[in-house]
Image 1 (cartoon, rainbow, N blue to C red):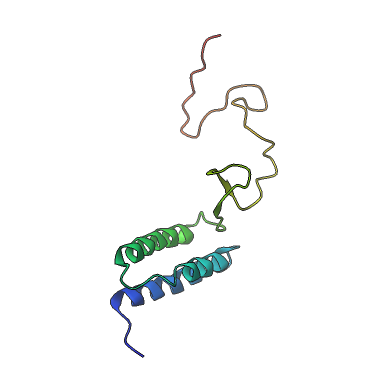
Image 2: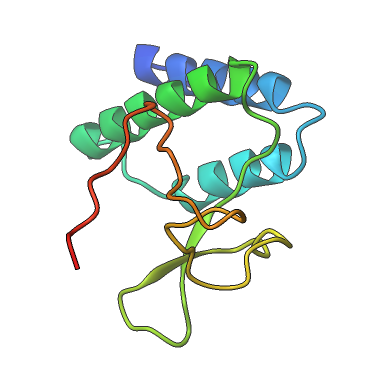
Length: 122
């Protein structure tokens, strides 16, 4: 068996790190394995694509390692809308459709940055 190139060693190391970081997070290990299997047939000569996927994997690893990640979801094409994206997971139970700009008390919601949005005069 021939020796692995530097890039191959980096990709295998990234694979191991992603699997370790994904332990205990629902869907993470399966998603990592599926992504790597999907791209396993890339030819060695497609260096630009391999480097792009490597950098993308590094960013995903940083997100997984952050304390905010609890699971890995995926985006998939919705069957009803061509070109539209939707979550592969079910929407949250409290979402009944489009959100109203008003909270439950009937007042305008304050965005996360704390600034009030201007409402058009009627």
